[in-house]
Length: 124
Image 1 (cartoon, one colour):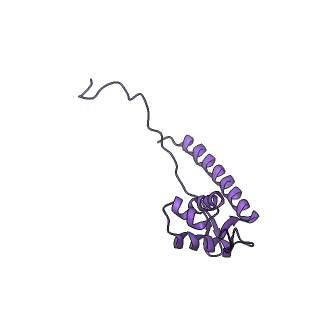
Image 2 (cartoon, rainbow, N blue to C red):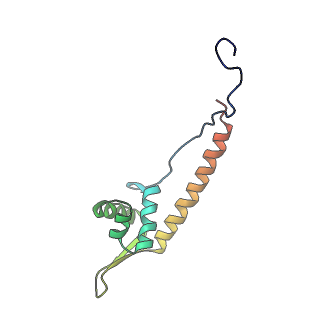
Image 3 (cartoon, rainbow, N blue to C red):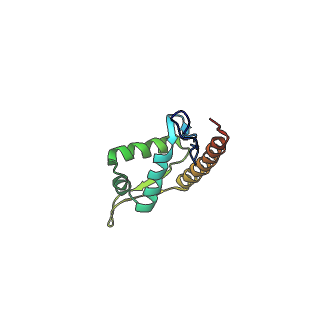
């Protein structure tokens, strides 16, 4: 010890990380972000806005507002609903919805790579 402090340095130096969020803006504000893309994937998985919302602990009303916002902002709807019948109605992603998911995840991956690269340059 020297002046009451240990002489040896800590074995691991703290690493600083840049953090950030990414979303795609549309004419009305947020078009799609992390939560909305998860909602779209859950709709694809469950075939229902109700089931997708439940799987995310989200109200149906909120999920419907998000879907409605995305459908209004997109050139073509991202989600289509079919009304009941013998087996009941359902909800499915359209090809545009699949494109939205793919575009978001591609941008998300690029953004995470950028954040990691910039984090490695931090020398604080």
